Image (cartoon, rainbow, N blue to C red; front, side, top):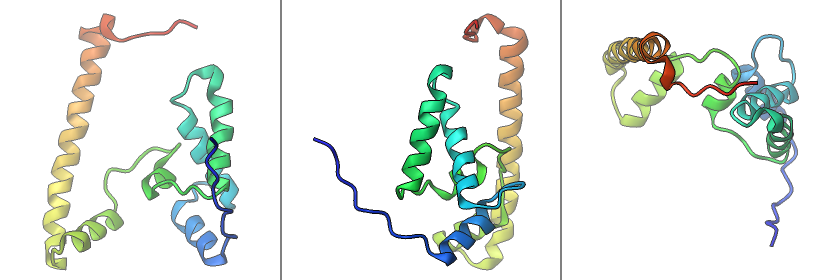
Length: 140
């Protein structure tokens, strides 16, 4: 039994403009270019021989109405950002904090980001130099 999805709603100008304003990277000028980048990035975790197929499927899903979470649209295929003013403002609003608490949240987030970055660096160094035999390597 195949799942029947409703037809996607036609693209609205404000939706297109918002997507491009918030999520377009580098020289991307169209929604299709954003979707291609996202599809390509999502397909990178698949087996090398299957990536092109998955990229097409992910692109088709987006064209048929699937909308990835904002963080996926924003960071897929580019160097991620750990902190953004928008994410802090959203967190403050979502938790009912006052705007005066934004600086507290920012300081906490900075500390957390530095700790996370340090931990990931230490883990990477351990696997690179202390335990290199424990890293699975697939020969090409």
